[in-house]
Length: 226
Length: 120
Image (tube, rainbow over all chains, first blue to last red; front, side):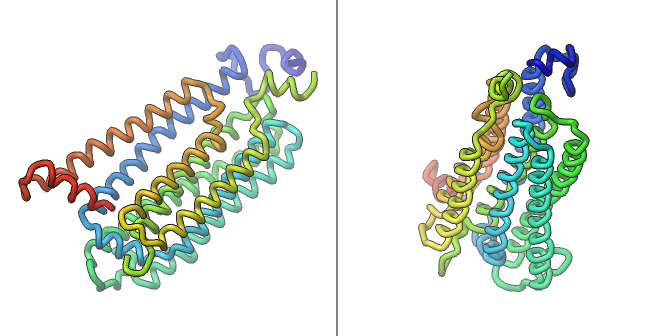
């Protein structure tokens, strides 16, 4: 409170149209969630299309799912979960306002984990798919059973993981900006809304992957005879 | 003014590190569980279990990492409205798509079941 009084009616980051700091914070959170709701429906449309076509071509989708390597998907799930933890820790560090360097360290760690996810996805997984010849339109050498349906499955796979990867790239860009802003002392325990709402975005992208992983890699079953 | 009271008045709820670590451990454990279960033959239940675990993981991330447990009521209503509209989109589309088999095999409502379970 003493800090608020010292800066008069305008503490750093406090916009004049708000009555209190907490009202401003709630407005930022609500606004970000409204955006995330549009994202839920955006990805939801894809999940729904996937469900409909899976119902129409069940055996083909299970065959296609078995072409993907579970260890890649599982590893990347773990990488994203760790990145969500480091993001949450970074925001917590800004909330408590103890050390700016600590916040920057958590954010850099989050960014590196995001980059690790993309590296594993592109360098190992997609490259593996390219070599195996299961990339529709680019490298297609699959002539096994249910070939047309498997091709449809792989289209869903590349569009869904591709759009997810695009969101990761955007997230890494946002983190870069946040690191610069943190280094320039733009945030305090009273004002850290950009960190908070970017965190919401990052966790949302994590949640999309939490659903993509079982839907694409697991639900046909991986046991012998599945 | 002490740091604690300043946090209470000016800053949002600060989640203890122990909570974040517990949520993280649960998320990793559930990832291992969902991967392991895929290698066990549960028939149709493989899909149900995988989606159930995904929903639990989502709730953990939303409530704790995204601070919705501590968020304002208005924010929660906006989020619930989003999921409600998602449910409308999925339910109405599937109720159309999964019942189209009627005309081909007209044996009344009984035919909906074999078509609806094809997703699993």
